Length: 332
Image 1 (spheres, rainbow, N blue to C red):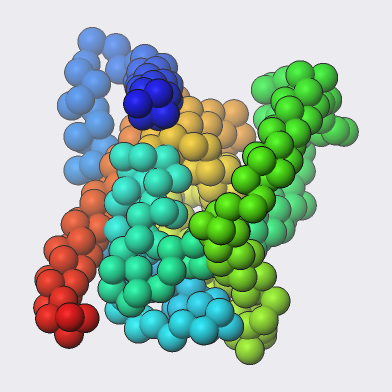
Image 2 (spheres, rainbow, N blue to C red):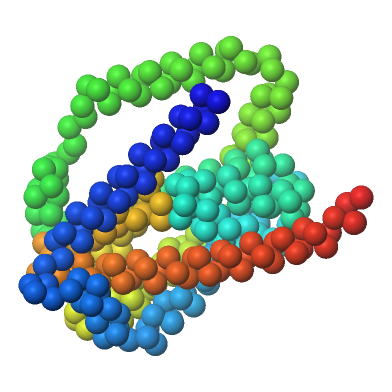
């Protein structure tokens, strides 16, 4: 009961933070005597729907590539799954993430278990391995954006109170990390003889190390590069879809893509709030875009992206439901 209450309060806190950030962003949308909703709708109407449709296709292609890469990671741990099951589970994960931050990682593993009978602890280990690989590519991306726009990005970080020469680590952060590590060791030694826990930890470890046992490592790297290349093309298409941002060049698209990716890593539902705060600030400070246009662009883009995930996720949920029901007689 106490654990449920704690989870509920954490979820409420996340929703409140998200709402506050979105409200702060909307508050900066100064349209004079005009209506903010009308201004956002006009931004949508001015957009090039062809580019937005292209963005949707590229987004789905990137998710398919992620599903294929995940399928590849499960082979070394002894599970050969279909691309369909992997893709459906990935899309359901994205759908859940819109409501429960980081809940998608768990739900996609559970859905895959229902479809392919893969142990969730093992598939979750492979998901964590995926995230580690993605973080490496994210750092490479940030490095490339700094090379492309060094002066602008250092000025931007300076305005946020962050020195380009390095980050100052608060003593409280160090204390927090030490407490977290100590707590982890305490729990480990407390329950190390628990057979169920041993099985879960063993499966998780097996899935986590699968990346080192992938048969074709070059192909795995190619898939990872393809995913991030498609993410970039997605950002390029959407930036070209709006008259206000269509004049931005390659380096600007790279920088905004990096800022958007960082914003999406914040544990808020679908990056809502963080995305609406960081990206408009970058557009205004780095590229002198009028603040109302920057905010409207981000709201419309994020809404379109969210709609794609909702539709694809709900369709995947329905398909998974019928596949699971169809296969039940076989399991018996």
